[in-house]
Image (cartoon, rainbow, N blue to C red; front, side, top):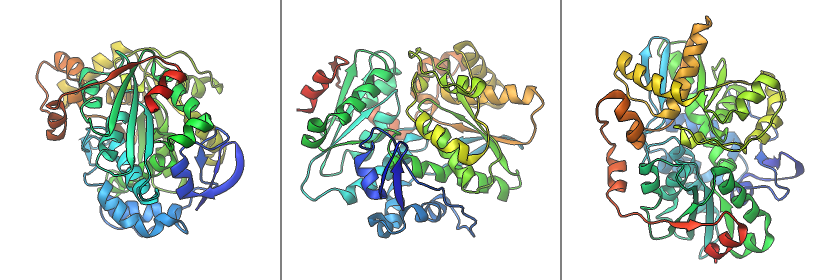
Length: 420
């Protein structure tokens, strides 16, 4: 498939778009059309993902590698845990860094490993609000030809997230930016816009601006929707906690492709640019506010550009709501009391938005995307539920490693020194 920048320009092959990350004009790569898909479908996430992604890879260098790439990347499941017959949690946190970002990061790493010239050294420059950086570091750490530089906002990720980011060592370098996530994201974009930096360090991105991250995220929403129908729960709607909008957009694209998905509702924290866009029809980025759901602390979501590019094609209105910290605490406590389930602050935003929908009389089957394991946020969750949370073995292994990060001024010249 050939793809094109959201700002126009010439079409380029999918593999070229994955290598470039950001389009030369500053736009984001998108398929010109979302292929309609009707099956019949295989069984299991990997088999279905191969069928779903095949049209995007058709005619591209990656087509012959797709089967192997998916078996390398998707070595864990995305089950739906049903709290009631009509309410489920799509557990996206069973990967090596206990967050949904593992799916996209590992697929992207598998693709780029096959696309870079042998013997070259490529720099993955990634901004993270908490979970992306660890997922990218984990995915690329053992691959020859790559180094990873992670930018994260000082004091605005959980202690365990911060430890993860600095625990990889070797070819991974963690930088604690003296600013917000939006500063981190701005630095990445400025570096890509600098032709000297981009060329001399062979820069590429693993943020959600990368099409190589977005496309594989479509697959687990399609899989969950088909599983919901097959198991008798019915055609689901989804509530998707979102910060940079990539995960929610992937769910919308799965619906546009024809999978059995009814409504898609975005749940944000107090960084409410997406919710305000849904309420008013006007996009107004704002300064980032620090919240309990820190991985969603994004004041200027990059994927808004993709959303505005596609939403007229989809033909359905944007739905979104936002949740404050007091509500996050309350719903974490209540969900554990009602169902014995510990949830992370981001998942709590989704559960709260669904609760409000139910209060207004909304019926039907709904699935909330559970984006991260609550053990990553034990300092928030455990005092609220009154018990300790068992830690996934992969997370425990990372937290047992020494960690190191270095402070970074939020300026391009400071980042250039790191790159050099």
